[in-house]
Image (cartoon, rainbow, N blue to C red; front, side, top):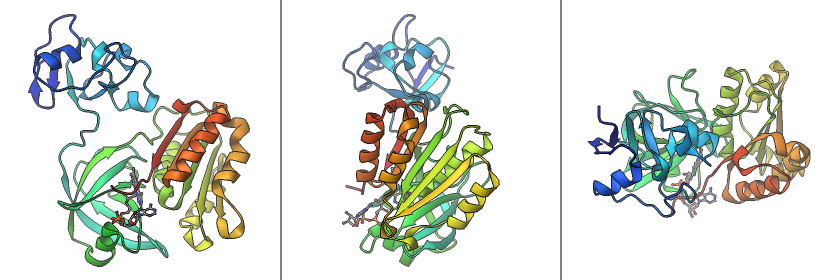
Length: 315
Ligand SMILES: Cc1cc2nc3c(=O)[nH]c(=O)nc-3n(C[C@H](O)[C@H](O)[C@H](O)COP(=O)(O)OP(=O)(O)OC[C@H]3O[C@@H](n4cnc5c(N)ncnc54)[C@H](O)[C@@H]3O)c2cc1C
C-alpha cells in the first residue's frame, strides 16, 4: 500500500516531505496558508490510518477522534488514506422503515441502510432528489438500533418537511450521505460534568449522545435541558423521565416558554459555576446555539469543551 493515498489515488511522497507538499506536487488543489500548523486552512481527514500526533496539534478532541490533521505539518510514517475535511463520501440508498409523530410538529423518521458508520449525535444529509437535500441529526445509536433515526420538525412550507409528510412512507427509498459533525461523546472525560442543552429537535443528537455516555459508563453528573416554546413542543418526556429516574447521575430538565422557562437562561444560570470543567453540548436553532456558546465561554468554558450543531436552514 502506498504511504499516501488521496481519495483513491496514490500520491508519491518523499522521506521528510509534508503531506501538503506532496499533494501540491501531485497537482491536487489543496487549500493552505500559514504552512506551519497554525491557521488550519489545509485541514484534511484521514479515512484510513492514524495521522502522527504532532500533525493534530491545536485540534479539538472530537476532531482528533475523527482523524482530522494538518497536512502542512504532517510527515507520515505509516500508510494514510486522506480526503478533504467535508468529503461526505458517496450517497447510499436507504429504505424508510417508520414515520411516526413525536409531537404536534415533529416526526420520527427511521430508515435502514447497510454499513452507514456514525457516532451517536452526528448528522447526515438526507437526499430526496437532486435538488432536495437537508441535514438531520441522528438520535439513534449504532450499537443499539438497527436503523438511523431522525427527528424532523415539520415546517409549514418546508420542502423536505412536506416531502416527509406527504410523499414518504414505509418502503420508499431515499439516499443519505455522511456522517458529519463533531457533536459526539467520544473524547469526553467520564468524570466530567456533562451538560446537554437543546431546543426543539435539538434533542435528537443529545438523545444519541446521552445514550452513548451511559453505554460508556459516564460517571460525572449528566444534565439534559430540553426547551420548547410550548408544553406540547416537548417530546420523549416519559422516556427521559424514566431514564433519569433509573440513573443516579442523570437529570432531565424540560423548560417551556409558555410556562416562563427560557431553556438558555435556565441552563446558564444553573451551570455557569461548573462551566470551566464541564463538557457542554449545544444543539438547535442558530440563535440559541450562538448565544449559549458565547455565554458559556464568558463563564469560563473552553471553546474546545463545547460541541455544538446549529440547525441553520438550507441556503
Ligand atoms: C447540522 C444540522 C443539523 C440539523 N438537524 C436537524 C434535525 O435534527 N431536525 C430538524 O428538524 N432539522 C434539522 N436541521 C434543519 C434541516 O436541515 C432543515 O433546514 C429543516 O428541516 C427545514 O427544511 P425544509 O426543507 O422542511 O424547509 P425549507 O424548504 O428549507 O425552508 C422553508 C421555510 O422555512 C424556513 N425555515 C427552515 N428551517 C427553519 C428553522 N429551523 N427555523 C425557522 N424557519 C426555518 C426557511 O427559512 C424557509 O422560509 C439541521 C440543520 C443542520 C445544518
